[in-house]
Image (cartoon, rainbow, N blue to C red; front, side, top):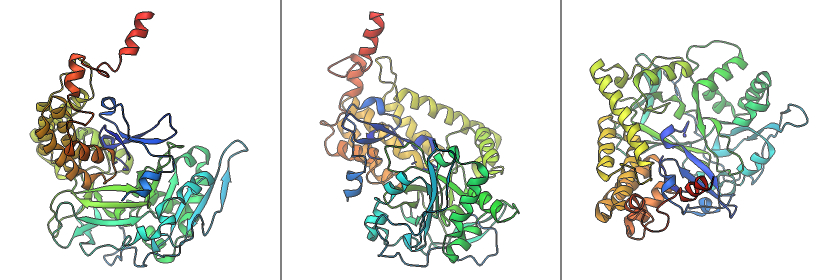
Length: 463
């Protein structure tokens, strides 16, 4: 997953509204950009391809009630750098195809991890903190006593809060059990891929492997190979690696986070940290004891019909969350709000003189997200409001929303995400920020950079 907005900077399955894109600069550095405001800044924040700046900066069970949560073994401080316990079996589909192998680290995070990828990406992964600075894994895979696995009516099993959890509290930090390079699905035939998946899971330590095999299969029954494949399909996330050379995401499974069921308006959000191969989940609103902890498996800013169709097609269930099951009049109104949100986002992405975007429209976007109880995307709305107010010369209102964006972004994004970095800069000095008077300059063609498509227009005139 983010799994965000449009500001350029250091960087979920990630939600569509929070997707980041990787771009290359002329200096050979890597920039990770949130999508929405990319057109508004000509000065992206970059880091080198190995992520030097990034690295130097500060489930749904199907068995009985007696589940133990994975991660009882403390992290090992002796995980060797650039070393794998196993690097086989492998598969190469012809001489021109890359070879994909299982790379297994038996002690990673204290519970082991398997990765299916090629040698180049495996070498890149071993330069991450989890291998080079294992102290950064301190405290991971140790579920806090805030929840339990319990029977959930209509959903089999899920995670349920046992104590009050305040907005912003971290609920889980856990390393991946299995990571699969999406490129492998292109080059490895299905039958061979299923064999690799089984080997990867069988390499996991006994307790961890048992936890993995005890995840939901939505009632599916089959042999070991078929069960491993079904559990992977049912419980996986899309995650992005810190690797500018390759755009492919990874398929990832986290045995505890994957026990969280879906809700179109969840109370928990998550972020994958490629520095440690760790998924972090955090409460995005106050949660009371006995309340189920839920995630959104999909982009929540879709109509009810589109959400339910996607969930049924991909995961095989009809969503019965409160937001989907409310009265038709409320559902219709929600769909209209979602449609208006999409329209507003298009306006904010328009920096031509004809753009209708205003700070008041950003205020409306905030209100619409609040009406939708969509707390995971508030950081985006606050960021847009800060940019729009600064863009028309309102520094104090811009600072207000920049501070709100940082506070929300530290929950749903992370401290080094481009949006959080940029909003911190804006809050400290709105007058020196690139967004100062930006909307006015674009609208009235004032100053350098006021017409971003000027060269394109000239080329068309020449033709």
